[in-house]
Length: 367
Image (cartoon, rainbow, N blue to C red; front, side, top):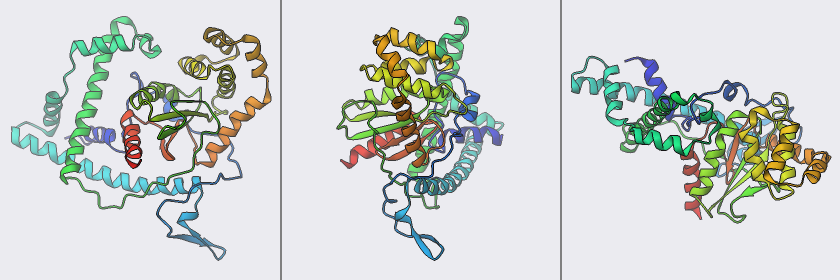
């Protein structure tokens, strides 16, 4: 069996699952445009101690550093490094399990190769009907990514997309069953996730203020992947109505996204007139064409007072508010967008609805 094929499958499962990129493309900006080149601040925000771990990290100049005294970015950095080791171990085990699984299937079915066994396995599991394609097209008819695809190519591309999603689900199910049965067991210790003190910064939010779970998002209005995450966040808020609050905080990557800062100011200015998320959604729908004229046009479209909006756009305090968010994000160890904190537990980059739901369900179960 081709190792590359198995490795592709394993990548869907490990590292929190890469998630699906609505609708069909993996934009190069997703890889090259999310890194932050904002200069790091010299101060660190106060952070909660690393939960439940007071061991000795080491010493410098004769001074000892305990694990439970690390600040936000330090705790997160250590956790992510330890998590890389755990994930690598899990990936090796999954890789070997999958190869063994399809070798056994080949023998049982008397097939010519493990590749053929893998194809047969997914053929049994993956079936996308024309009705499903039609329903998807109808539900996403206003999606800009779908509109850019020629009409006669939409059906086939959507079918390929849905089949890929179904294959991902089938593969995840295979691995989940193996873990649940003990067929895959990771002996390497899974690091304990730090829980950071992350507040809303007085920013705008969707959902009840006293929600049991708060998702704080740090994002950039010119970031393609941030734009593609908006439907996921909307779906999460809808799914957990009354239980989840979604807070948006700004993290403009100014060196690579020159319109991220003014776009954030435009959103805040619309928020001054009670239209923050109307502008937020509109900006992300038009992330490729951000600019001064667009902000004016969108302000008019969503119904804010043009004069007040223009005055607000020139107010230095609005820009300062955005930069304050960015500084606090850096102090929390953020170096790219998007980044999410679910009750202080960090999720970053390519996150799908399942990952959000996992953390949200865990947090709700604690209450």
